[in-house]
Image (cartoon, rainbow, N blue to C red; front, side, top):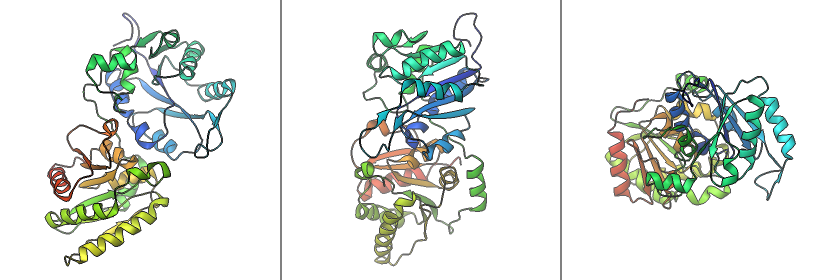
Amino acid sequence: MSMKPGGRPPTDILLIKSHSMGIGDLLRSSAAWSALQARWPDARLHLLMLSKQSGYATEAFIRSHHLLASAHFVTVKTGDPNRGRQASLPRAQVWAEVAQRLKDQPIDLIIDCESSGMKTALLTWWLGRLKGAQRVGIAQFPLRRLCYDLAAPSVPRYAARLGLIRPLDYTERDFVALAALGIARNGTRITLKSAAAGQAWRQDHPLAAAAGQSIVVLNIGCGTEDAIPKRPELPKLVACLVALYAQQPFTLHLSGADFERKVNQAFRGLFSTAMAQHGWQAEVVDWAGQLSLDELTGLLGQADLVISSDSGPYHMAVALGVPTLCWFNFDTPPSYHPQPGVAALILPGPDQFVAAALALLALDNPC
């Protein structure tokens, strides 16, 4: 199917994003990538991400995504994003860098996935002229419409037409631009496959549990300063896991970044003490700081159940198709994955937690 009657299907599609370099934020776009591949199976997808700082760990991780032919990350800010307001680099400098990155890459369709501002809209207009490509974007306001050949309705109109609550869930946001191409989400899920590093790690580290036990991966996560309010309170988390162990014994594997070792150790101490009060002793393995994001897929993919806070590994587990329970400290609809195999609980007590975990463990794990 082509974009215009009598036209040729696109062969190389460039998707422009600039919202966030978070693991979950980028991975949520994979549903839109799947929808594009379903429409044009032979098309190659290329990501252009305008990031605030170079060297994010997510760069290598997203480059290895099975739906992307290439991914390019161009820095648009100066300074450290964690230290106050950053200055924007000159537009000419950013555009020159983009042109250099895409110099040898044919592009015949450009999709601006962002809904606000003019920076990505103008870049899309300019790149369209440079590459002779058709331009697609969101007509959030009239001036933006002039930058595109095909324009989707504004986000409020898109949400109203589909009866969606705003703010839109993060997976849905890229489908606003795709509406200009007549591509609807229709329940498309985010997706992820282990790349070579993840497959190798899984082969070298096969997880095993005693007869009758499950393999549970716990990601306490939320170690960055701005995300700590999302982290479960350890005593409450321990109480829920002890209650689950009483119903379904498990071997526990802890994931996390290097700077999350401390919270993992604190949890491990509390958990061991609580288990000992019942005369139980569960195997606990802490992988914090030892795995790359690709290798983490090898750990998550072997779990019977992943339990996580609202952080990157939560979205990774969902995308891998692993039964996943996410602990939320407050109602956060844009972060939910309302689909089978995923449970989003807000400050659960032990009974609610155990019921949800057991329901997920009863599912067949496709990984």
